[in-house]
Length: 199
Length: 169
Image 1 (cartoon, helix red, strand yellow):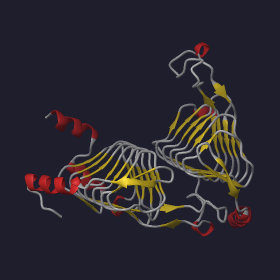
Image 2: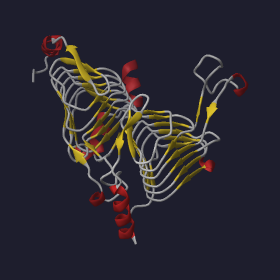
Image 3: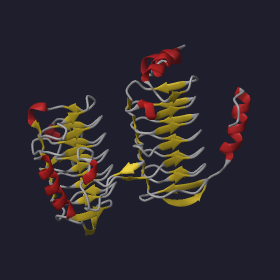
Image 4: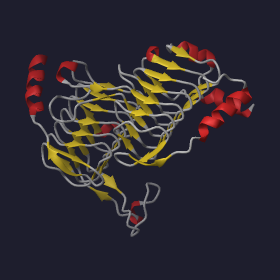
């Protein structure tokens, strides 16, 4: 009951979630903080068992699967290109994820107050595949695929795609070793136990 | 061209000592305190914060501040020779202060930190996660912790700026 009250105060109710105007939103255990900023909810799909915490920004095209947690202060800038967070993926606090970015080289003007013809905005879809996890304060640049089960250490800058079930850290981040694959076993056990279907 | 737009979720602690020009966009969860001058055609992305103090921060035309950038015109002494934090009276602290100038067409990448007293001259670019503690030469690209010179930056922006401003007439 305590937990229910806590969630009632901080997070949108199911009825409120449905009135926000998301492209789609789950009906089971979806907790989105009232202090998150949601731009263009029509371009946002959200699954079941999702929690999005305080001061997050959801902007542009976003697809969020099931069992996904986005911790406080994360910024997801999907633009027209899009960001996909697959099932069981997670972002720790203060992460920034960009699917689009201005040209920093000096060849064009930059920033959203300038008309598009004077800018060179380039992008590429960003995907966090199943069981991938990103540590606090990290930044992910456009065109990056965090492959299944890969993990990114805190304060990392991810400029290129990372391999499945690898551990990566640094600015820019580099692979340091393999990651254990036990989440695959636990996922199966958990879904069987609660009677959910294995996707 | 749009006017200036400021998020309702941005926080201004000293509105009387802050000036803002036209065609400026300030996004969610930004914080501004102390003396700050923001000129024209400027975007300040989410979560960035500006601690102007008495010395102040000036942001010139067409500058870009990406998300999570922290700009300090004053900072506590971390050496252990004095106390720190805003909850301690000034007589027990040694606060380092210095005016900050962010020049025209400067662009600062996400999560960078700018320390007191630096002059970021026209056209400087800074990569994401840069720690900027020294002034930089105009039209250079810099990155790193602490940030270092990497290369010259193209100046084509200046021609495009002229075309753009003419298109507004």
